[in-house]
Image (cartoon, rainbow over all chains, first blue to last red; front, side, top):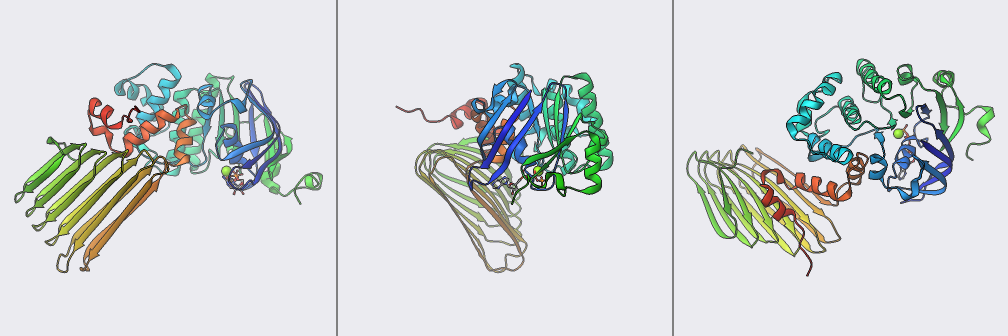
Length: 253
Length: 213
Ligand SMILES: Nc1ncnc2c1ncn2[C@@H]1O[C@H](COP(=O)(O)OP(=O)(O)OP(=O)(O)O)[C@@H](O)[C@H]1O
Ligand SMILES: [Mg+2]
């Protein structure tokens, strides 16, 4: 599904290296979690997978759905079935959520749906996430709280039915009850489409209590320094991200 | 905005005068240079949305009567060099002007918005608001110059300006949902230029890029 081999990435503007010899392999139906401290390069990783123009892949190989990422553009990656839940979804003034979602849906199905049928179709998903339908007629994310924006991301996910999902700090902005609710909706989706692959990016292990990963990776300074199971997440929760003797030599300086 | 009451050609010289307590909501469409003079009497309310293509213009607004109010949405698509000059004269207390000037500068040309708002002493309780934006698609010149001449304490004045290309984060976000550059520009522009109020035909005409040759 996603294969990254010895990938080095730097920013286009100031040539700052962020991912350093980074490798990761995600198979169909697997759930991976990456945990790392602020600035480790987690959001960068998610954007690199979606070919954000601010980053350049200097070394290594990335294949996504068995295709070389080099030859793909962001919108193609999305159309092949990858979905990114952003850490901070932006406000886009003047573009209504429904117009944009209908356009996205059209790209997937090549069928136009009118506003009425669209709202009818999405009503249930709004209810599941306790989102007011008015949001569909407003500008994208305008006037929404951090948590509501994350729910709006989930709403789009349910509509587009992706095969590979990257969640960048899904839990940020969500209160305890909302997190439970959103994770339930997410798990229901995985139950319905069990071949979906997931990459969860997070600082805290809290979300992993609800969405159970098959693998947990610890990421420090642009690379994965340790891989394990949920026990690793618990260990990190207890001890923080300080690099232990074992991994010290691989870290910088 | 309220419901548009009438549509008019905006070309050439035009005078609009609202009597006491009159309310009006007008849509103007123009592709030639224009000059508009507006006079508002007491407690009148005027809402204008103007769609302008490749045109320069001058707008003079006289808020003559107490409690008179204007809301002006100016949306322009620019492929040649153009300039808009707006002057607002708050001539009575409790008068309100709200200007929303949005331009899409498509080519490497110059587009400028010059806005002067005058609120002399004694015009207490007045409101002057401006939100001016130019999206500069290529490397054209975009200039916004708002000047407030305010001699009265008790007024509420605000302005915001923006010139530049569409934000990369917005574009990236829409691309991660499978939309292409062209679709994205179309959506962003339609929103930016308040294109929803136009008919399909007008929209096509207004947003269509000039064909070469
Ligand atoms: N476009 C950019 N230009 C310059 N520096 C950048 C750019 N993008 C990221 N960085 C830097 O790279 C480092 C990693 O950023 P990134 O956002 O990937 O971290 P993160 O692991 O997601 O952190 P957090 O946990 O706080 O979300 C940071 O030091 C950041 O300042
Ligand atoms: Mg981050």
